[in-house]
Image (tube, rainbow, N blue to C red; front, side, top):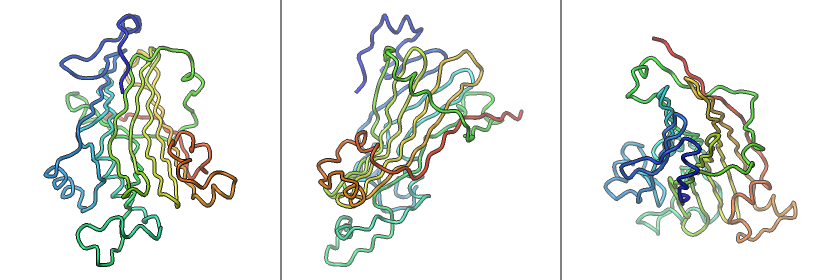
Length: 283
Protein backbone atom coordinates (compact mmCIF):
# COMPACT_ATOMS: atom_id res chain seq x y z
CA UNK A 1 0.00 0.00 0.00
CA UNK A 2 1.37 3.39 -0.99
CA UNK A 3 2.50 5.98 1.56
CA UNK A 4 0.74 9.26 2.05
CA UNK A 5 2.53 11.92 0.06
CA UNK A 6 4.23 14.69 2.04
CA UNK A 7 4.05 17.77 -0.20
CA UNK A 8 6.94 19.55 1.55
CA UNK A 9 9.25 16.54 1.14
CA UNK A 10 8.23 16.19 -2.50
CA UNK A 11 8.97 19.83 -3.22
CA UNK A 12 12.35 19.66 -1.46
CA UNK A 13 13.26 16.63 -3.59
CA UNK A 14 12.10 18.25 -6.84
CA UNK A 15 9.29 15.72 -7.23
CA UNK A 16 5.62 15.95 -8.08
CA UNK A 17 2.74 13.45 -8.09
CA UNK A 18 1.46 12.11 -11.39
CA UNK A 19 -1.81 13.60 -12.60
CA UNK A 20 -5.07 12.33 -14.13
CA UNK A 21 -5.63 9.74 -11.43
CA UNK A 22 -2.31 7.97 -12.00
CA UNK A 23 -0.37 6.75 -8.97
CA UNK A 24 3.31 7.60 -8.80
CA UNK A 25 5.86 10.39 -9.11
CA UNK A 26 7.79 12.44 -11.59
CA UNK A 27 11.23 13.08 -10.13
CA UNK A 28 14.72 13.99 -11.41
CA UNK A 29 13.95 13.07 -15.01
CA UNK A 30 12.03 9.89 -14.14
CA UNK A 31 8.34 9.05 -14.33
CA UNK A 32 7.47 6.15 -12.02
CA UNK A 33 3.94 4.74 -12.00
CA UNK A 34 2.24 1.79 -10.29
CA UNK A 35 -1.16 0.33 -11.05
CA UNK A 36 -3.04 -2.34 -9.08
CA UNK A 37 -6.00 -3.81 -10.98
CA UNK A 38 -8.43 -6.71 -10.40
CA UNK A 39 -7.69 -10.26 -11.52
CA UNK A 40 -8.26 -11.21 -15.12
CA UNK A 41 -11.79 -12.14 -16.18
CA UNK A 42 -12.57 -15.56 -17.68
CA UNK A 43 -12.51 -14.24 -21.29
CA UNK A 44 -9.18 -12.53 -20.61
CA UNK A 45 -7.75 -15.75 -19.13
CA UNK A 46 -8.76 -17.70 -22.24
CA UNK A 47 -7.01 -15.13 -24.41
CA UNK A 48 -3.87 -15.38 -22.28
CA UNK A 49 -3.92 -19.19 -22.49
CA UNK A 50 -4.09 -18.93 -26.26
CA UNK A 51 -1.26 -16.39 -26.46
CA UNK A 52 0.95 -18.33 -24.03
CA UNK A 53 0.02 -21.69 -25.58
CA UNK A 54 -0.92 -23.24 -22.25
CA UNK A 55 -4.03 -24.50 -20.47
CA UNK A 56 -2.53 -23.72 -17.06
CA UNK A 57 -2.40 -20.36 -15.34
CA UNK A 58 -2.22 -19.31 -11.68
CA UNK A 59 -5.49 -19.02 -9.75
CA UNK A 60 -5.18 -15.25 -9.53
CA UNK A 61 -3.55 -13.35 -12.37
CA UNK A 62 -3.43 -9.59 -12.01
CA UNK A 63 -2.84 -9.14 -15.70
CA UNK A 64 -3.58 -5.43 -15.88
CA UNK A 65 -1.42 -4.49 -12.89
CA UNK A 66 1.95 -3.00 -13.72
CA UNK A 67 4.90 -1.07 -12.33
CA UNK A 68 6.76 1.10 -14.83
CA UNK A 69 9.82 3.35 -14.51
CA UNK A 70 10.60 5.63 -17.45
CA UNK A 71 13.73 7.73 -17.88
CA UNK A 72 12.35 10.60 -19.94
CA UNK A 73 15.57 11.87 -21.52
CA UNK A 74 16.63 8.53 -23.00
CA UNK A 75 13.19 6.94 -23.36
CA UNK A 76 14.43 3.96 -21.33
CA UNK A 77 11.48 2.13 -19.77
CA UNK A 78 11.60 -0.73 -17.28
CA UNK A 79 8.31 -2.41 -16.43
CA UNK A 80 6.97 -5.40 -14.52
CA UNK A 81 3.90 -7.30 -15.65
CA UNK A 82 2.34 -10.73 -15.27
CA UNK A 83 2.27 -11.68 -18.96
CA UNK A 84 6.02 -11.37 -19.47
CA UNK A 85 6.62 -13.18 -16.16
CA UNK A 86 4.43 -16.11 -17.25
CA UNK A 87 6.10 -16.15 -20.66
CA UNK A 88 9.36 -16.63 -18.73
CA UNK A 89 7.77 -19.49 -16.74
CA UNK A 90 6.60 -21.16 -19.94
CA UNK A 91 10.00 -20.82 -21.63
CA UNK A 92 12.03 -22.07 -18.65
CA UNK A 93 9.71 -25.06 -18.09
CA UNK A 94 11.20 -26.37 -14.84
CA UNK A 95 10.21 -29.92 -13.90
CA UNK A 96 7.31 -30.11 -11.42
CA UNK A 97 8.14 -30.36 -7.73
CA UNK A 98 7.67 -34.00 -6.76
CA UNK A 99 5.27 -34.46 -3.85
CA UNK A 100 2.78 -37.32 -3.36
CA UNK A 101 -0.25 -35.04 -3.07
CA UNK A 102 0.52 -32.95 -6.14
CA UNK A 103 -1.49 -34.98 -8.65
CA UNK A 104 -4.80 -34.29 -6.93
CA UNK A 105 -4.16 -30.54 -6.74
CA UNK A 106 -4.59 -29.73 -10.38
CA UNK A 107 -7.32 -31.93 -11.80
CA UNK A 108 -9.91 -29.86 -13.63
CA UNK A 109 -12.99 -31.97 -14.30
CA UNK A 110 -12.14 -35.69 -14.11
CA UNK A 111 -11.09 -36.48 -10.55
CA UNK A 112 -11.33 -40.25 -11.08
CA UNK A 113 -8.75 -40.30 -13.83
CA UNK A 114 -5.03 -40.28 -13.14
CA UNK A 115 -3.53 -36.85 -13.65
CA UNK A 116 0.02 -36.57 -14.93
CA UNK A 117 1.71 -33.33 -13.98
CA UNK A 118 3.95 -32.60 -16.94
CA UNK A 119 4.36 -28.89 -16.29
CA UNK A 120 5.69 -26.64 -13.54
CA UNK A 121 2.52 -26.08 -11.52
CA UNK A 122 4.40 -23.69 -9.18
CA UNK A 123 4.72 -21.04 -11.95
CA UNK A 124 8.35 -20.40 -11.04
CA UNK A 125 9.72 -17.70 -13.33
CA UNK A 126 13.21 -16.39 -14.13
CA UNK A 127 11.62 -13.03 -14.96
CA UNK A 128 13.68 -9.98 -14.00
CA UNK A 129 11.64 -7.22 -15.61
CA UNK A 130 10.96 -5.94 -19.12
CA UNK A 131 13.09 -3.22 -20.68
CA UNK A 132 12.56 -1.19 -23.83
CA UNK A 133 13.09 2.21 -25.39
CA UNK A 134 9.75 4.01 -25.25
CA UNK A 135 8.13 3.91 -28.68
CA UNK A 136 7.49 7.65 -28.42
CA UNK A 137 11.25 8.20 -28.56
CA UNK A 138 12.72 8.94 -31.99
CA UNK A 139 15.73 6.78 -31.10
CA UNK A 140 13.67 3.65 -30.37
CA UNK A 141 14.29 1.84 -33.66
CA UNK A 142 18.05 2.37 -33.48
CA UNK A 143 18.54 1.37 -29.83
CA UNK A 144 19.20 -1.94 -28.17
CA UNK A 145 18.94 -2.37 -24.39
CA UNK A 146 20.67 -5.29 -22.69
CA UNK A 147 21.99 -6.37 -19.28
CA UNK A 148 25.72 -6.95 -18.88
CA UNK A 149 27.36 -8.80 -15.99
CA UNK A 150 29.39 -6.49 -13.76
CA UNK A 151 31.43 -6.45 -10.55
CA UNK A 152 29.57 -3.50 -9.03
CA UNK A 153 27.16 -4.22 -6.22
CA UNK A 154 24.05 -2.47 -5.01
CA UNK A 155 24.99 -0.20 -2.10
CA UNK A 156 22.86 -1.79 0.61
CA UNK A 157 24.30 0.47 3.32
CA UNK A 158 23.14 3.57 1.45
CA UNK A 159 19.64 2.12 1.25
CA UNK A 160 19.45 1.79 5.03
CA UNK A 161 20.16 5.49 5.62
CA UNK A 162 17.44 7.59 7.23
CA UNK A 163 16.18 9.12 4.01
CA UNK A 164 12.52 10.06 3.52
CA UNK A 165 10.49 7.68 1.37
CA UNK A 166 8.60 9.86 -1.07
CA UNK A 167 6.59 7.01 -2.56
CA UNK A 168 6.10 3.30 -1.89
CA UNK A 169 3.83 0.70 -3.44
CA UNK A 170 3.54 -3.06 -3.90
CA UNK A 171 2.07 -4.61 -7.05
CA UNK A 172 0.93 -8.26 -7.00
CA UNK A 173 1.37 -9.89 -10.42
CA UNK A 174 0.04 -13.39 -9.75
CA UNK A 175 -0.71 -15.82 -6.95
CA UNK A 176 -1.64 -19.48 -6.54
CA UNK A 177 -2.35 -21.23 -3.23
CA UNK A 178 -1.57 -24.70 -4.63
CA UNK A 179 -4.96 -26.00 -3.52
CA UNK A 180 -4.32 -24.87 0.07
CA UNK A 181 -1.03 -26.78 0.11
CA UNK A 182 1.33 -23.83 -0.14
CA UNK A 183 1.80 -20.57 -1.98
CA UNK A 184 3.23 -19.34 -5.27
CA UNK A 185 3.43 -15.54 -5.36
CA UNK A 186 5.04 -12.93 -7.59
CA UNK A 187 5.13 -9.32 -6.40
CA UNK A 188 7.15 -6.18 -7.05
CA UNK A 189 7.74 -3.43 -4.49
CA UNK A 190 9.15 0.01 -5.23
CA UNK A 191 10.29 2.89 -3.07
CA UNK A 192 11.43 6.31 -4.19
CA UNK A 193 13.80 8.46 -2.13
CA UNK A 194 15.32 11.88 -2.90
CA UNK A 195 18.56 10.10 -3.91
CA UNK A 196 17.07 7.46 -6.20
CA UNK A 197 14.72 4.51 -6.53
CA UNK A 198 14.94 0.91 -5.37
CA UNK A 199 12.73 -2.07 -6.13
CA UNK A 200 12.37 -5.74 -5.24
CA UNK A 201 10.75 -8.23 -7.57
CA UNK A 202 10.15 -11.40 -5.54
CA UNK A 203 8.95 -14.84 -6.56
CA UNK A 204 8.12 -16.82 -3.42
CA UNK A 205 7.21 -20.52 -3.37
CA UNK A 206 6.32 -22.78 -0.47
CA UNK A 207 5.16 -26.30 -1.22
CA UNK A 208 4.10 -27.49 2.22
CA UNK A 209 6.27 -30.29 3.55
CA UNK A 210 8.43 -30.33 0.43
CA UNK A 211 10.22 -27.23 -0.82
CA UNK A 212 10.69 -23.48 -0.47
CA UNK A 213 12.08 -21.29 -3.24
CA UNK A 214 12.93 -17.59 -3.53
CA UNK A 215 13.90 -15.73 -6.67
CA UNK A 216 14.68 -12.12 -5.83
CA UNK A 217 15.55 -9.37 -8.28
CA UNK A 218 16.68 -6.06 -6.84
CA UNK A 219 17.22 -2.92 -8.89
CA UNK A 220 18.73 0.37 -7.79
CA UNK A 221 19.22 3.67 -9.57
CA UNK A 222 20.87 6.78 -8.14
CA UNK A 223 19.47 10.00 -9.57
CA UNK A 224 22.06 11.86 -11.65
CA UNK A 225 21.90 14.38 -14.46
CA UNK A 226 22.85 12.15 -17.38
CA UNK A 227 21.62 11.12 -20.80
CA UNK A 228 21.43 7.42 -19.80
CA UNK A 229 20.82 6.18 -16.24
CA UNK A 230 23.04 3.80 -14.26
CA UNK A 231 20.84 0.90 -13.14
CA UNK A 232 22.14 -2.13 -11.28
CA UNK A 233 20.19 -5.39 -11.17
CA UNK A 234 21.01 -8.08 -8.64
CA UNK A 235 19.38 -11.51 -9.06
CA UNK A 236 19.44 -14.26 -6.45
CA UNK A 237 17.86 -17.72 -6.55
CA UNK A 238 17.60 -19.62 -3.26
CA UNK A 239 15.81 -22.83 -2.38
CA UNK A 240 15.80 -25.68 0.09
CA UNK A 241 13.68 -28.61 1.24
CA UNK A 242 11.84 -28.82 4.53
CA UNK A 243 13.92 -31.90 5.37
CA UNK A 244 17.21 -30.08 4.77
CA UNK A 245 16.10 -27.18 6.97
CA UNK A 246 14.98 -29.56 9.72
CA UNK A 247 18.37 -31.29 9.57
CA UNK A 248 19.97 -27.91 10.37
CA UNK A 249 17.77 -27.54 13.43
CA UNK A 250 15.13 -25.27 11.93
CA UNK A 251 11.42 -25.96 12.51
CA UNK A 252 9.70 -28.51 10.26
CA UNK A 253 6.26 -26.95 10.89
CA UNK A 254 4.80 -25.10 7.89
CA UNK A 255 3.49 -22.37 10.18
CA UNK A 256 7.07 -21.25 10.78
CA UNK A 257 7.51 -20.38 7.11
CA UNK A 258 5.00 -17.70 6.27
CA UNK A 259 7.41 -14.78 5.89
CA UNK A 260 9.87 -15.08 2.99
CA UNK A 261 12.01 -12.25 4.40
CA UNK A 262 12.71 -14.39 7.48
CA UNK A 263 13.25 -17.56 5.47
CA UNK A 264 15.67 -15.95 3.01
CA UNK A 265 18.71 -16.18 5.30
CA UNK A 266 18.08 -19.91 5.87
CA UNK A 267 17.92 -21.01 2.23
CA UNK A 268 21.05 -21.99 0.27
CA UNK A 269 21.97 -19.85 -2.74
CA UNK A 270 21.58 -21.65 -6.07
CA UNK A 271 22.56 -18.77 -8.34
CA UNK A 272 23.53 -15.12 -7.91
CA UNK A 273 24.69 -12.37 -10.26
CA UNK A 274 24.76 -8.58 -10.70
CA UNK A 275 24.24 -6.75 -13.99
CA UNK A 276 24.19 -3.21 -15.33
CA UNK A 277 21.78 -1.93 -17.97
CA UNK A 278 23.54 -1.01 -21.22
CA UNK A 279 22.42 0.81 -24.35
CA UNK A 280 23.68 0.34 -27.91
CA UNK A 281 22.74 3.11 -30.32
CA UNK A 282 23.17 2.48 -34.04
CA UNK A 283 21.68 5.38 -36.02
